[in-house]
Length: 341
Image: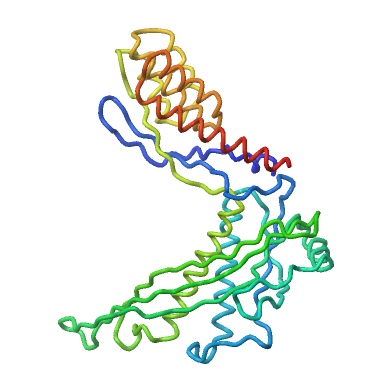
């Protein structure tokens, strides 16, 4: 798990190689970016708990119809599934789902009192958790916004397209097991536009099935969103690199090694390219070395080569690229500093 805590982990799966002209190509790869909220590095196992079960005094709208409790439970399952996917996909945490459920907010909006120290201790011991993330408030609604129908040639039933807006309001708390206290409390809403189609009998916007599907989809996304608040997430980034320049054969060789994801040979060839040939080729090789070192997760060396490319050889693309690397380094150093506090 220590390796998983390194936010500089880079996916070495090459997604795209695209030519951009002027002897350049674009390389796209996945990288982990820090989350908005810092989580102590000692936290490895996270337990997910449903604490948004409506109490006996919870009032539901008559518009929700029969089976509202079952549909709401399914929606909470979807929000926790999204959370579990988001946390697990980051590689930062081991994620466990509790079988216990607890009554939460009576309104579905306001936070209840925090979990007691006793319950936190019981859950932590039972599941071996370092932290607990609890869904503590949950409410949802679906509002139809329009629709239309038409009869296709040769069809017996008319086709119906409909639109609506599903809104999910939720609140999460994250508890530190060591401190027996909440370390994060976050309430937000997520709105998702929904479109549905089919025959006018089964596809009507007023059917409970369509409403449930729309709310479940919005709930799943809301869970993913909270996960991205406390765990790093993968994003795709693109970097330009040079395929040739100044007749430097080592630069061309290094670029080919980059296309093969052979980073060791790429570094070897590009380093030789910075030592031989014309100024133009040496500057482009320095830029490529910066890209390679970012891909393998060595941001400081990447920054050094970008500085050489711009400062020594006046390679224009490297100026902005160096600023991008500086921002990444600062963000990750701040994250590590916060995690140690």
